[in-house]
Length: 139
Image (tube, rainbow, N blue to C red):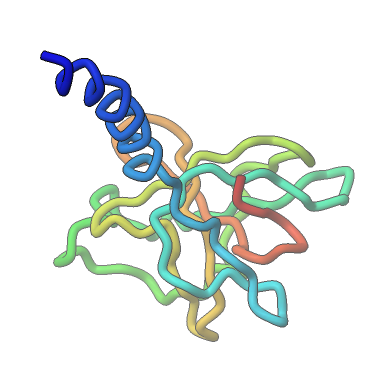
């Protein structure tokens, strides 16, 4: 009985520490020397850092099929910087990244530059923001 009384505080400490290590957040995505977030990431919370008073451009193409996330969908050329601006987000706006279909938040254009898939609404409606520290950063 005395042994149990001694073990209870020790077990309480051990058990209280277990969830802390289990819930440790993964590191935030890091930009490379050019400011690009090039590593595959499933990070979903980003904030606009673009100082432009118009905000950061979010682009999309009318040629993109509604089922753009389907591996068999026929996609237009990945010339994202030439696509239409469909939305602008002001500095300090929090963006929610889309990770469909494979759990990653980035797409890459024809120059292999990363673009963040930003959720616009239901049914995987998105637009693309250049994934560069001049425009956005993970939070």
